[in-house]
Image (tube, rainbow, N blue to C red):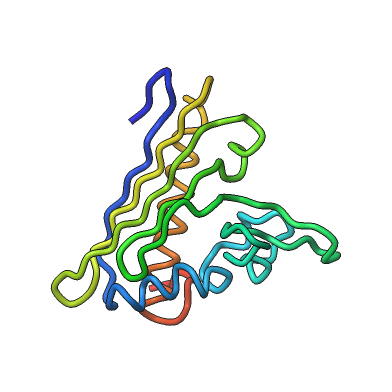
Length: 156
């Protein structure tokens, strides 16, 4: 959904893993499934949720002398939910107000993941589709990683 106030990116996935395993991968293994093309230094292993005293999704710089805080953690309920705030990528310098939520629920043979990213700000119409597409790709990487151990798509 896109309007003059911003946009919403929503995705629902079924992942063949328990909610606890999915949550572990989401938080503790973010660098293993995150697409390195969507980092500042092209190396997703630099991503972590450990960033000083404030829980946040951070990326260490190449030289180790700095970092980028991508999003702050607003709430964590292990195995159940994660809520973050902030603008990713091209949204970061635009002064947007944004909230990203992951809701995990046990489902038949796995977990239902409900994802929602609400972004409020001005002149965002042209960013809505690419941001939604990238978020869908990232979630697909997470699903593949949890189910197979490899986030990369396979060629069939």
